[in-house]
Image (cartoon, rainbow, N blue to C red):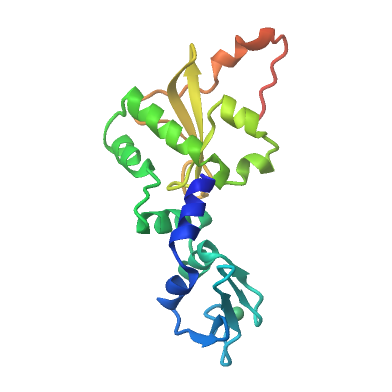
Length: 205
Ligand code: ZN
């Protein structure tokens, strides 16, 4: 996923992008503008093209083009990445699968494609790191992040095959857990119980 963030930064020049929303004045090798994030009469918002970075000396905000899109449009990091990715012709990819899940029962192929796509974006959320889940486990169990829905996606395996998933929505206004439409909820990865001759199993919430 770092790939998408990098592609956005490579292809979208921060001066061009911010210049769409703010009148910019050139000052030396930098640009300045009145800050859109605090009441500002004398331009205190600076953009450094060499570093593709903005900073406001008035209110202290700063960051890259993704951060600007987040603040300016009042959207999440994931939404900003998706919006900018679409602008450069990259698709975050979950939309198609998502529409299908809302209309009809998705096929196993669609479920696998959705899980794989979300797995690619696992590093887009700090959720796993915050819970102390290492990359090795994220990869082993193909955990993922659904950028579009701001949700953690945990695939459910049976005999080594992905057969379903549970989606843990991180937004409070959505149901906490969702399964793909038409697929019954299977709460645990029973496969794991066959793993590694484990004798003790801890189930936590
Ligand atoms: Zn400011």
